[in-house]
Amino acid sequence: MANVTYFARCGIIPRMFTYIDPAVRRRLTEQGKLFQIDRDGVRVDAGQTASRGALISILGPIPLPLKFCDSRADVQWYACVRNTELGKIEELADDLREQNGQQSFATLASFMAVNSVLVIGNPETWNNPLVRVHSSCLTGDVFGSERCECGPQMRTAIERIRDDNQGGLVIYMSGHEGRGIGLWAKAATYLLQDAGEDTYQANRSLGLPDDSRDFGDAASLLKYFVDGRPLRLLTNNPKKVEDLTKFGLHDITRVKHVTGVSDNNRRYLTAKQEWGHELDPEDLGAD
Image (cartoon, rainbow, N blue to C red; front, side, top):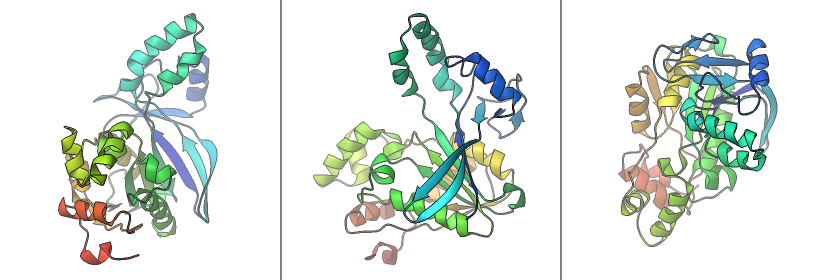
């Protein structure tokens, strides 16, 4: 099986990780295990300021065995935190340390969404990698819910990329639960759907957008890892291609990614089809 490199995305401020230990940050930087890219996907030397926009910092590798169903992969994990999420948390952490309020650090950490990238194969040999930008879904990805097809889409994407002669990557967007509305609101939309509304109507009933996801960080990571080469994007949603294109990515070929269809989510997928997802009637047939 191809090796997998697991990256997490984040932004950084100059004193990143000082709420843990500044000596650790310095050591990791000296070892080359902590580096930064700007919003254009350009690597920034330690101590420099990004020319445009917030920085994205990449930390690792950390060995992490990966197993799902009957498949295995050797994973190297790189974990990071966004600067916009660390700004005020940095100040609060300093105060907590002075007060010895260690029990409150879990509360601070809960605000730091970590997006992840799984790089499969050797990026140096890519000329048209296979890519999946996957929105986090606790109910589907972790619990195995069949109200959506998210879990099978995630697992199948890894398998398709692993078995592709080009290789590629999966970007896992942790802040995208419920198309960006969060888990609590998503739970409410499920109840509204059970009362007869579709997934988009339920969002509107709560006064929320149809889709509030931001793909800016995903675009920056793709610029860095794909490095200007064409890519094939595993998605049934043309809007995802449009969103990434708005952030300066080009040469994207959409590749249909249908899996996990069942009686429990066929109505949900039909709503997606009606709202623009490229799904054919045969795609929504019985498994």
